[in-house]
Length: 292
Length: 317
Image (tube, rainbow over all chains, first blue to last red; front, side):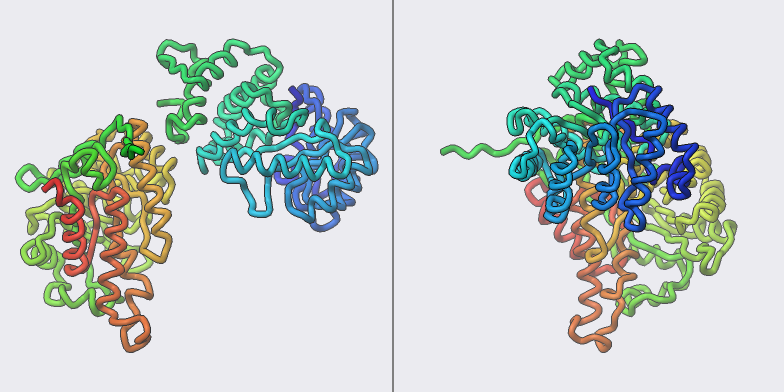
């Protein structure tokens, strides 16, 4: 699986200020640390970046390329900023992301073609968030068609079905998994990617990794290709690298209906089993889900 | 072509909770099917109405709300008696609005004295509702709990920010508590878990999901109550299997739709009728979502709601 480090993000409390003030050292340190942690890509999230976004992205790409040769995922809704990054990326870049809004399609798809970049096809339509797995399918077909039309092949499209927080709407959490089970049939050859940590948005910070890991294990049942993740969650990385096969087996069996007696499980298995129950919607989420 | 009636797989039920003192108790909850789905299972206890009484004379009420109580409005104990004797209130909810730090800021001792008077005057379960100011409620409700030890009050709202400081005294003194969360099912469940961790027994908890009037977001409250019941009844979620209490009267009567006099905006129709209907329809909406206790104000709104509840449950009566 491809792991994309999420930690360089303008919204981050630790690194956001360094990005805004163009302090290269903390950014270089973080890029190196993500690289050492075993990431395959670096996500560079500068947000909407309405003001001087092109200058910021250029500076950021240059800064991280000084210390790492990892490929980059350029994460912004500012198309100018995307282009300023694309111009100087040394490795083949990933555009994060192209949604179904006409202005995004018109501006960003040709850019992908011009700079030979891959794209994340975000299943966000003109009506906003898709309501279920079927609407995700419709949007996926739509974006693949539009990308193919200008010559971007399926294997350069990474479909992002949009992960939403478990504490907001469990049906969306389930729909994202359901969609993943259908993607191979509706868009053969396309890749897939999720912004994993969003599933635990709103959960106390120290507990977020438990949900992130379990949700990744669930997505792995349907061969998720890539995930944008916290680069410093070592267990998550081991899980993604296939080093925890027993846990994966437990999670996947539970997705197929197996209902283990929680009291007989090891402490580690308990974490995953309780989290599967919450993420499958069998148990309503509360901050104390691991304790009850 | 055969029509197959949809069947809901229930696997849990709402806890039956007895409120009030031994001689004047009332039992709520106990549902094992969705509200008024009496074709699935009878409702062992229909929703009950707690009539509001205020510790100090309300200053900004609509004329229609004052009118039924104007002879007793300065005396909470008499006010409560009137609700019981004349309007057959099944419970009383004493609102301690006089303790509001942004208002009269009456002391904990004063509040406790008022509560004691009302508690001694009534023969129905008594709810004590604070101002949701954590610091003030901690002082006031602790004092109330102590002064009325053994009176089996129902005290609230206990929120995430003050439950730790109020629940221990309430339970030690034999009262029940109202667990209040801000229109969020996950936080409602979490607060109930935390209360359990603190040692609050399961038969002492009511859920207040936080509600609002028709026109002011009642659909959110409806949805949260509905989801609480779905989790409790079809997923056997033990931490949500508590009766639900809705403090709806003040929410409806503070709206401009309830307060605007007829003369000020004739297009809105008769002020009294309008306000009463707003309260009745808001309360009824919550009853159909799953409320077990409705805190209400106007006798005519209450009459309407009682009729509607009786109607909906008529096949089991």
